[in-house]
Length: 94
Image (cartoon, rainbow, N blue to C red):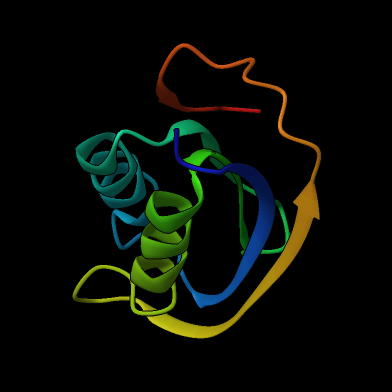
């Protein structure tokens, strides 16, 4: 069984108004990664990813590029204990 991991990520740059959340959701779902993504008031995007280590790392690599009109300046990550709490990958509006 592959090693599972959970990562809390903060993505900064031009990442709002460029379909970053929806593109992240599609990328995560395509890799079987669960969790959520949301916009923050300061213009950044926050996300939590759970899944197989290689798949989570692949989503994080995607986040460092983002969708076509995004400009990603930084992706800060913090590993958290894997909880397996998500049934899929969602966009949060809060």
